Image (cartoon, rainbow over all chains, first blue to last red; front, side, top):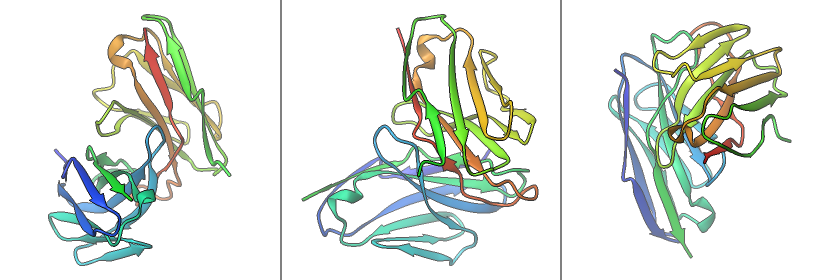
Length: 112
Length: 116
């Protein structure tokens, strides 16, 4: 069964304090790994797709990396507006459509 | 401009009273999904439509049904809501393309259901 485990569950940072979020996965052949941002009371917002080990994607203060077993979301010099829950999801190779299996997320709080 | 619109944003119902949640999209995507997300939990796929083809997840209770009258609209019907059905219900779309391709999901803002 495909599984996604995210750690830590919650993370509190001071503004400017860089850190990383972890997403470990087991999947029967990875078609894609996705990162989403979810603000309280809202739907997830797409951030990145990673397809193969060694791939990296960047967007503003966020950088996502992928290995064969895990992905990291690196946050450099975060700002309070980066506070949100970050969800990781995987799509298996044997799915016939874009079925994503999500992790429970990391709740990030950035204090000024 | 909102691309996936869910209504209502907040729905309060009584135990056992049927509820319908709606989702509309302006992306002309051929795949539409309904996810259930309980507090601090991962979104859980209930079912999806690939065009008019309905696909139910094996563990989705019979209490949950869906309709897709056209490309733009999709409805989630909860026939007899129980206390355990209180959750955020998320509608999402994707471009589909050829079977098995990847693609980002575009989510609506969600409908939060409270069951009294």
